[in-house]
Length: 244
Image (cartoon, rainbow, N blue to C red; front, top):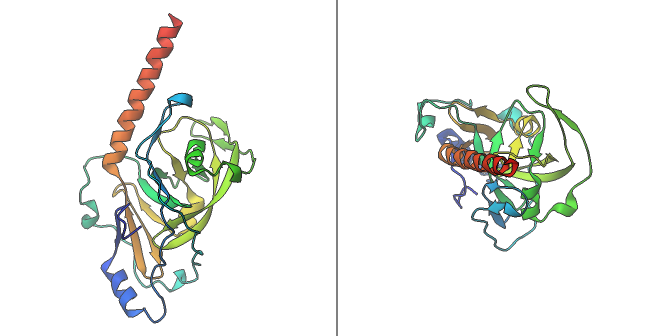
């Protein structure tokens, strides 16, 4: 993913130095699994659902994951500074939204939410990934901000690749209208030792070769937010017209 440019990822200078001097111990990030498709934002319901710019290529088996035994030996601090603000529009209240390689697919518009105790994915994403047969029936109760209760319809365990590190992650499936394709919560955030910053719209985490960074997608997030608002407004107009 770093070389293919599907997401804006940066490795710190110190991380590059660590990688250069530690080649005898580490062989560098493994080659990521071949990309099969990219899922942009899914808008609409039922027959009106649309997928933006889905592309397909050949597929290969997923590489083995890397363990995290090296975390305790990390000698580099994780910090955010002015250089991380390049390209951002301030002031902002935008969500921290990134792209991640989930199984064999680059899934865009994933919200990183350290306030969520679960990782959630929309079933239409799994339909596009052709993974419906891997869904395990499982119903759990999720409680929202105002104690609103939602039931999940199943779960699926998938490999999530970031910075050359693969982490097996369980996603709960919720078929509700949402602005995001998926929500990455604390199970993945803590498992990867991720330090997120909503202010800088950035996440950083340790890897065997230093500190890896993924920049969020502020402009895209704003565009999709307005699209979702327009869709909601159009739906409300249709409902009012039907009432008349």
